[in-house]
Image (cartoon, rainbow, N blue to C red; front, side, top):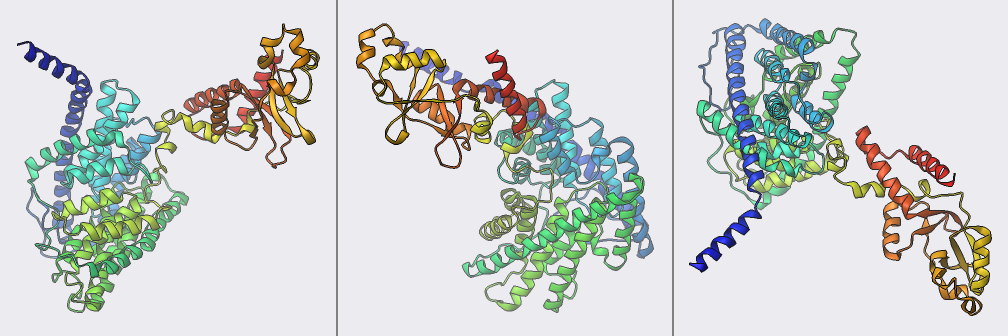
Length: 633
């Protein structure tokens, strides 16, 4: 009996070490966000289907190919005759309504929603106005339902993030937890509408930074994504976006071809980014009311669609046709021309997406990026198949790899892109070539990103000001903090202690530089070092300064305060001489431990109040000058 009680006590003590309270709390919050994101994705997908059927199908008679793994609630409705003139004006009409909704009710719903979500995380304490999800959904339905070249992921990311932010506000949660629920909502919406729960969770925590992830968001993002995916599949069913070949056989001889694809996607990625933001800058210069600019972009898209209707809508269907090499691919019986046609459609898609979103239309750039990458991959797959048919027997594999490396490179989400493509294809056969091509494209595009609100890493994010406080000292210089008005008196090492004490009484200083042969510094002596000998007159005659000094330690004025702190810790000194940065060894000031701590505290408070991580050198110098004046008075 006693043994069983002891065992139960051990279990109880062990369970107390586990954070069950925090666990169940985050489970509950993440599930709520996941349910809301899943329902929002269901309604959003149904609304997009209805708009596409009524506008593009019934009115214009346009029926683009669809990905064969996609599930639809409504049967396709299409007029027997294609009305090309409607393809010219419908995108402009939808963009006009979208522009009115956005600029009248929620200007932050403009453009691609993922960037808005990133900006809210870094710069708005994770807060999104409650009206934004509704306005974003309606505006995106009009943009995309009328043929706009945009994706579903941007809107649903912002919509899901909005629900997460709203829940946090209703529960009056702190900013840190609001940011985590923001990410959970984004992951839930994306995981539901594309049926990629793992890839969506990785995307939400990876897209915030160019280098790094938001590790704290892993648990809420995974739970929310799983729940939202489950809610969505109750209506639309399970499955994968693309129908693919039964298996993709890997041959190590294919790796140079996949590496070439990764190399080729990098310059094309830069081209897409520059066209996208160059178009935005051009629209910004137009002297028109903001709500009219999306309509002008839609008009340009319509003109482009007259000659290349492939650019309308999301475009996943054309990737599907390239993937399976069916008769939908232009000139499939002439592979070289087919490759040129696929590459041409990819370039046209870059322009179409820029006209749609850079003008202020509402939609995402994630899906167009994958479509562009898939078409590029298809073009190279056709070429490589002609060059080495036995080594590259399945050119469709390059479509999937192209999707992953292009989107992962321009979005700086290499790991998420790998998993997303595998989930969309329902196969991990291409994991190795996806890793290789993604790594190459990501490395080449380190200084370029399609999401301009991304920051370099968590250290650069205003959301993490105060989390990495030790690095503040690595950004401040000794020369900006030290006291340059103090003159460090020099005493020879052979001076008697009695004479040294008389000098202390005359000068009033507490720290002296001990010099040896050639007047070179050999040590430091402070008043505290000889305080115990003040009452011993005989010792004052016998002891010299060399006997009481401590080894010479100094810090260059160009050093960081972090180096000075390390020297204070190692030496246990309370003051350190500051020497010139030219290496001559001349003393230019004195740095006290109190000055270092005061600089640290002042900079931390200033950064938290101003919401910045950039050091303010002149402000720091002014602060210390005033502090020393008050001290001397």
